[in-house]
Amino acid sequence: MSHNGRMDSVVVRDPEIMSGEPTFRGTRVLIQTLFDYLEAGYSLERFLQGFPTVGRHVALLAIEEAGSAEKKSEDQLETKLDLP
Image (cartoon, rainbow, N blue to C red):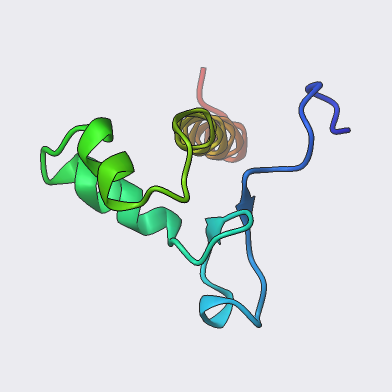
């Protein structure tokens, strides 16, 4: 288990799967596809209907992980720039 109490990430990178692009664990569905759907204004429901191998909980965890990674990157940048 990871330090946050969850099992391994729902996002994996494997050079043998989709040329190493990030996918949902146990699938060949690219994480970027989820974000493309959402950015285009489609609902999570529509994404899940189109990709039934990705569960709702897994998709929500991927969104959460992306948000956490973005926040961590922002914090690191602020530290490097010595911003308040």
